[in-house]
Length: 252
Image (cartoon, rainbow, N blue to C red; front, side, top):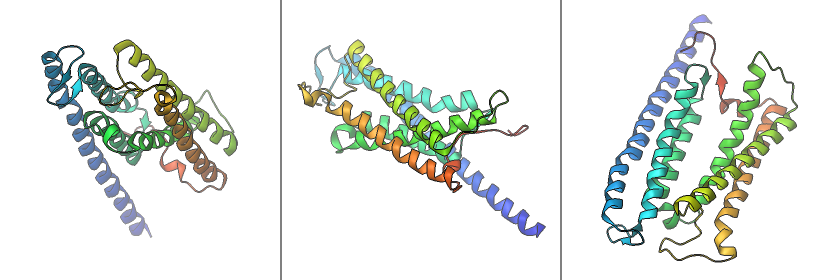
């Protein structure tokens, strides 16, 4: 029995080690993909005048500014979890890999490679996915509170699911506020109120992107909340594989 347990334990460690190695490789690829374009973007900004379109890429200066901001924020977002939580918080490896892949799809493919314009519903897919991830963050937040010395909460699965949904929805709204603010301050097009050609959208068409983002954010959050509710209510263990956990004392 002990030999079988030891073998199973070694297999689990081997799988975890492989997952961590894969996560490190993905992290390096995404980081390099965010750093390298910055130099090119700065060079293009210096070579074209304000209000003109770059004939090389059919992009304006404001487009390049947006790309640089997104790359810098992406680098910060990529390194933030390890900077803040490496010693005390354990992020599931698979969840962290999904997070890094999401950043790559949103910034490297979405902004730099113009997938938001070239691929139908690319933005909608990413917002739905992010709504689900933020929903998992809501479950993580409640789990972390339950593990602290100052809090001891006994919450029903329905309340935890509702909290997760509301937190995810709120974060989605805050993201749209961020996009609206920077569009106004820096003359960007994060809310896609104009086409890639520079044509301004008018009326309902100008707010469709923002409203669709909010709706699919809510949908993704709702799906994760339902999954989490079933997992907690019937002890399925699904959501536990996605939530952030407090590291055990002495763990590296």
